[in-house]
Amino acid sequence: MGGGSWATALASVLLKNCETINWYMRRDDRIEEFKRIRHNPAYLTDIQFETERIIFSSDINEVVEQSDTLLFAMPSPYFKDHLSKLTADISDRAIVTAIKGIVPGDNMLITDYMVDRYGVAPSKALIISGPCHAEEVALDRPSYLTVGGYDINVASQFASVLNSKNVHAIVSTDVTGIGYAGVLKNVYAIAAGIVHGMKKGDNFLAMLVSNAIREMERFLDGVDSRPRQICDSVYLGDLLVTAYSRFSRNHNFGAMIGRGYSVKAAKMEMEQVAEGYYGVKCIHEINEEYQMAMPILEGVYDILYRRVSPEYAISVMAKSFI
Image 1 (cartoon, helix red, strand yellow):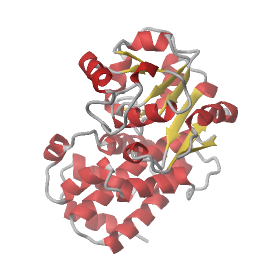
Image 2: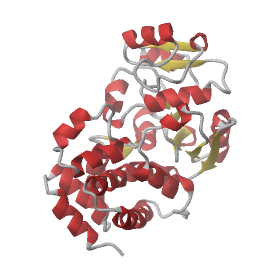
Image 3: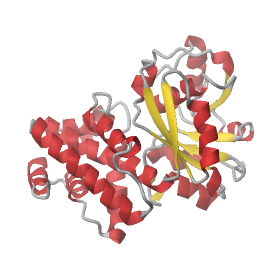
C-alpha cells in the first residue's frame, strides 16, 4: 500500500518469496507507466519488476478485499487520506506498517491506530523497521530488518517472507518501542543534518548521536517500560544509518536547515517527505504528558516550529550533552 521508494523496495523484497502481490498505488497514470517500463517511474528506477506478477490497482478497497495481509508503506502525513477511502472491513487482516511516523492529529502509533479504529486484532498488528535504506535494497546490498509483533509466531511467519540472500529479518515483541524509535531516529537525523550543515564537525556530531540514543532510551522506557536493549540494531542501528547516511532524507532536510534554508524552502526542495518534520511535532505533543527530558527533540522542535535560530538552539542543546 503506497507507491514511494520504501514501498517499491519492500515490493521487490516480497517478490523474491511470493508468486504474486497486490499493489495499491494512488495514481492510475503512474500504474500504467509502471506496467509499460517495468519499474517505478518515480522512485528506485533501477529496480526492474516482472510486472505480470503484480496486480496493480488504484482502488484501495479492491486491493484489501483480495489480500490477507496489508503492508502500509506511505508517508504518515498521507496515511489518513488514503484510509478515508477505505470501506472494506479489515478487522480480520494482518496489518504490517513500514511507516516511520505517527498518525497526525491523533498522535497514535500506526499499529495502535489500526487496532483502535479498525478493530484489527493486536496479535495481527505488525511493524517493520531497520536499519535499512530503500536505496540499498535497490542496490542489492546486505539489508537488515526487524519485524515487531505482539505474537512472536505471527511476526516470525511474516519475517520468513522477507528473508532472502541479501535481506535478513529478525523478530521482536517490542511493537511500541520499535514504533516510537522509528519516529525518534528521524528527528535525531534532522538534528544531525542541521549540525552537519552548520559545519560543527564530526566530534560534535558524535556527541549529538551518543546523547540522542540516551534520549531515545529515556523516552521509550517512559512510555513502555518493558525490557529492551537499546544497542540492538532496530534502535541504535537504525539511528546511526539515518543520522549519517547520504541516503537519509531527514539528514538531508536538516542539512539544508543548517545551511540557512527556511523550513518552507527546504520542504519545497525535498523530492520526498522528511518524516521527522512531522514526527518532531507529534512526539513533542505526546511528551507533554510524559514530561521526559528531551533536549535534542525540543531543540529541533524550536528550530522547525518556533523559528528559533539553529545556532542558538544547538548551543542550548549542547549544554545538556554528557
